[in-house]
Image (cartoon, rainbow, N blue to C red; front, side, top):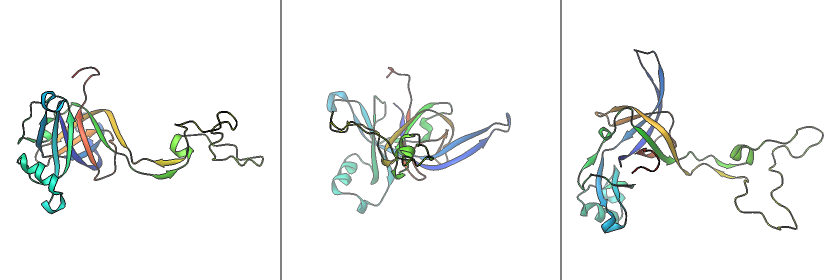
Length: 210
Protein backbone atom coordinates (compact mmCIF):
# COMPACT_ATOMS: atom_id res chain seq x y z
CA UNK A 1 0.00 0.00 0.00
CA UNK A 2 1.48 3.31 -1.12
CA UNK A 3 0.53 6.41 0.84
CA UNK A 4 1.74 9.86 1.83
CA UNK A 5 0.55 12.76 3.97
CA UNK A 6 0.49 16.30 2.64
CA UNK A 7 -1.01 19.77 2.77
CA UNK A 8 -3.50 21.00 0.19
CA UNK A 9 -2.17 24.25 -1.30
CA UNK A 10 -5.08 24.93 -3.64
CA UNK A 11 -6.17 24.41 -7.24
CA UNK A 12 -4.73 25.58 -10.52
CA UNK A 13 -4.65 24.65 -14.21
CA UNK A 14 -2.00 22.84 -16.24
CA UNK A 15 -1.76 23.64 -19.94
CA UNK A 16 -0.55 20.98 -22.39
CA UNK A 17 1.27 22.73 -25.24
CA UNK A 18 1.03 19.65 -27.49
CA UNK A 19 -2.71 18.99 -27.30
CA UNK A 20 -3.89 22.43 -26.14
CA UNK A 21 -5.83 20.79 -23.33
CA UNK A 22 -6.27 22.52 -19.96
CA UNK A 23 -6.42 20.21 -16.93
CA UNK A 24 -7.69 21.36 -13.51
CA UNK A 25 -5.41 20.04 -10.77
CA UNK A 26 -5.07 20.24 -7.00
CA UNK A 27 -1.57 21.01 -5.75
CA UNK A 28 -0.57 19.00 -2.67
CA UNK A 29 2.66 19.64 -0.79
CA UNK A 30 3.33 16.03 0.21
CA UNK A 31 6.07 14.64 2.45
CA UNK A 32 8.75 14.04 3.28
CA UNK A 33 7.21 11.52 5.67
CA UNK A 34 9.59 9.42 7.79
CA UNK A 35 8.44 5.90 8.67
CA UNK A 36 7.83 5.79 12.43
CA UNK A 37 6.49 2.26 12.84
CA UNK A 38 5.70 -0.81 10.75
CA UNK A 39 2.88 -2.94 12.16
CA UNK A 40 2.34 -6.60 11.26
CA UNK A 41 -0.34 -9.20 11.88
CA UNK A 42 2.02 -11.17 14.10
CA UNK A 43 2.79 -8.31 16.50
CA UNK A 44 -0.18 -5.93 16.21
CA UNK A 45 -2.97 -7.97 14.64
CA UNK A 46 -2.98 -6.06 11.36
CA UNK A 47 -0.61 -4.71 8.71
CA UNK A 48 0.01 -0.98 8.64
CA UNK A 49 2.68 1.68 8.21
CA UNK A 50 2.80 4.74 10.45
CA UNK A 51 4.13 7.93 8.86
CA UNK A 52 5.01 11.27 10.43
CA UNK A 53 4.37 14.67 8.83
CA UNK A 54 4.87 18.37 9.60
CA UNK A 55 8.09 18.78 11.56
CA UNK A 56 7.74 21.03 14.63
CA UNK A 57 9.70 22.11 17.69
CA UNK A 58 9.91 19.54 20.47
CA UNK A 59 8.13 21.88 22.92
CA UNK A 60 4.91 21.57 20.88
CA UNK A 61 4.53 17.84 21.56
CA UNK A 62 3.70 15.82 24.64
CA UNK A 63 6.32 13.68 26.36
CA UNK A 64 4.56 10.54 25.15
CA UNK A 65 4.65 11.68 21.54
CA UNK A 66 8.29 12.71 21.80
CA UNK A 67 9.19 9.36 23.34
CA UNK A 68 7.39 7.38 20.64
CA UNK A 69 9.17 9.28 17.87
CA UNK A 70 12.55 9.23 19.60
CA UNK A 71 12.35 5.47 20.16
CA UNK A 72 12.13 5.01 16.41
CA UNK A 73 14.77 7.63 15.60
CA UNK A 74 12.39 10.22 14.15
CA UNK A 75 12.54 13.97 14.76
CA UNK A 76 9.49 15.71 16.34
CA UNK A 77 6.53 15.85 13.94
CA UNK A 78 3.04 17.17 14.56
CA UNK A 79 1.03 14.43 12.84
CA UNK A 80 1.10 10.65 12.76
CA UNK A 81 -0.97 8.78 10.19
CA UNK A 82 -1.41 5.04 9.67
CA UNK A 83 -1.85 3.49 6.25
CA UNK A 84 -3.42 0.04 6.47
CA UNK A 85 -2.08 -2.78 4.32
CA UNK A 86 1.18 -4.57 3.70
CA UNK A 87 4.28 -2.60 2.75
CA UNK A 88 7.97 -3.13 2.10
CA UNK A 89 8.93 0.05 3.97
CA UNK A 90 11.13 -0.13 7.04
CA UNK A 91 11.54 2.16 10.06
CA UNK A 92 13.91 5.01 9.24
CA UNK A 93 12.98 5.29 5.57
CA UNK A 94 11.41 8.47 4.22
CA UNK A 95 8.42 8.53 1.86
CA UNK A 96 8.42 11.29 -0.77
CA UNK A 97 6.28 12.17 -3.77
CA UNK A 98 8.56 9.97 -5.87
CA UNK A 99 6.62 7.00 -4.51
CA UNK A 100 3.92 7.96 -7.04
CA UNK A 101 4.05 8.25 -10.80
CA UNK A 102 1.89 10.22 -13.27
CA UNK A 103 -1.15 8.14 -14.15
CA UNK A 104 -1.42 6.39 -10.76
CA UNK A 105 -4.95 5.95 -9.44
CA UNK A 106 -5.29 7.46 -5.97
CA UNK A 107 -7.88 8.39 -3.37
CA UNK A 108 -7.53 11.43 -1.12
CA UNK A 109 -8.94 11.78 2.40
CA UNK A 110 -9.37 15.01 4.34
CA UNK A 111 -11.73 16.99 6.53
CA UNK A 112 -14.28 18.82 4.39
CA UNK A 113 -14.82 22.57 4.66
CA UNK A 114 -17.14 23.37 7.58
CA UNK A 115 -20.17 25.45 6.56
CA UNK A 116 -21.79 25.88 9.95
CA UNK A 117 -25.46 25.27 10.80
CA UNK A 118 -27.49 24.76 7.63
CA UNK A 119 -31.11 24.05 6.82
CA UNK A 120 -32.46 21.05 4.96
CA UNK A 121 -32.43 22.74 1.54
CA UNK A 122 -28.71 23.45 1.66
CA UNK A 123 -27.71 20.41 3.71
CA UNK A 124 -29.84 17.68 2.09
CA UNK A 125 -30.96 19.38 -1.15
CA UNK A 126 -34.64 19.43 -0.18
CA UNK A 127 -37.10 21.25 -2.45
CA UNK A 128 -38.71 24.39 -1.08
CA UNK A 129 -42.44 24.81 -0.63
CA UNK A 130 -44.69 27.20 -2.60
CA UNK A 131 -44.21 30.93 -2.08
CA UNK A 132 -47.74 31.91 -3.04
CA UNK A 133 -51.29 31.71 -1.60
CA UNK A 134 -50.22 32.48 1.95
CA UNK A 135 -47.94 29.46 2.29
CA UNK A 136 -45.78 29.44 5.40
CA UNK A 137 -43.81 26.39 4.27
CA UNK A 138 -41.18 28.00 2.04
CA UNK A 139 -37.95 26.59 3.47
CA UNK A 140 -39.29 24.36 6.23
CA UNK A 141 -38.43 20.64 6.22
CA UNK A 142 -42.03 19.43 6.43
CA UNK A 143 -43.25 16.44 8.42
CA UNK A 144 -40.60 14.50 10.35
CA UNK A 145 -42.87 11.80 11.80
CA UNK A 146 -46.34 10.84 13.03
CA UNK A 147 -47.69 12.00 16.41
CA UNK A 148 -49.52 9.02 17.93
CA UNK A 149 -47.57 6.23 16.27
CA UNK A 150 -44.63 5.91 16.75
CA UNK A 151 -44.74 9.07 18.93
CA UNK A 152 -41.11 9.78 18.21
CA UNK A 153 -38.76 10.78 15.42
CA UNK A 154 -36.84 7.93 13.82
CA UNK A 155 -33.05 7.99 13.98
CA UNK A 156 -31.34 9.20 10.82
CA UNK A 157 -34.11 11.62 9.87
CA UNK A 158 -32.74 14.29 7.52
CA UNK A 159 -33.02 17.57 9.39
CA UNK A 160 -31.21 20.86 9.80
CA UNK A 161 -27.77 20.72 11.43
CA UNK A 162 -24.07 21.23 10.95
CA UNK A 163 -22.87 20.90 7.40
CA UNK A 164 -19.32 19.88 6.50
CA UNK A 165 -16.37 19.51 8.83
CA UNK A 166 -16.37 15.72 8.42
CA UNK A 167 -13.83 13.26 7.10
CA UNK A 168 -14.37 12.69 3.38
CA UNK A 169 -12.56 10.39 0.94
CA UNK A 170 -12.59 11.31 -2.75
CA UNK A 171 -12.02 8.28 -4.94
CA UNK A 172 -11.33 7.96 -8.66
CA UNK A 173 -8.52 10.54 -8.77
CA UNK A 174 -5.40 10.35 -10.93
CA UNK A 175 -1.88 11.71 -10.37
CA UNK A 176 -1.30 14.21 -13.17
CA UNK A 177 2.27 15.23 -12.39
CA UNK A 178 4.90 15.22 -9.63
CA UNK A 179 7.58 17.77 -8.76
CA UNK A 180 10.23 15.92 -6.76
CA UNK A 181 12.38 19.02 -6.18
CA UNK A 182 9.60 21.00 -4.46
CA UNK A 183 7.78 17.95 -3.09
CA UNK A 184 4.56 18.70 -4.97
CA UNK A 185 1.90 16.24 -6.06
CA UNK A 186 -0.54 17.42 -8.75
CA UNK A 187 -3.79 15.47 -8.65
CA UNK A 188 -6.34 15.81 -11.44
CA UNK A 189 -9.59 17.20 -10.06
CA UNK A 190 -10.66 18.48 -6.64
CA UNK A 191 -9.88 16.96 -3.25
CA UNK A 192 -11.63 17.44 0.13
CA UNK A 193 -10.68 20.16 2.58
CA UNK A 194 -9.76 23.84 2.66
CA UNK A 195 -6.49 25.41 1.60
CA UNK A 196 -3.65 24.37 3.91
CA UNK A 197 -5.75 21.44 5.10
CA UNK A 198 -4.02 18.13 5.85
CA UNK A 199 -4.83 15.34 3.38
CA UNK A 200 -3.87 11.68 3.03
CA UNK A 201 -3.09 10.31 -0.42
CA UNK A 202 -3.42 6.55 -0.92
CA UNK A 203 -3.12 4.39 -3.98
CA UNK A 204 -6.49 3.12 -5.13
CA UNK A 205 -6.74 -0.54 -6.05
CA UNK A 206 -9.51 -2.53 -7.68
CA UNK A 207 -12.13 -3.71 -5.19
CA UNK A 208 -11.17 -6.97 -3.52
CA UNK A 209 -7.47 -6.80 -4.38
CA UNK A 210 -4.76 -6.31 -1.74
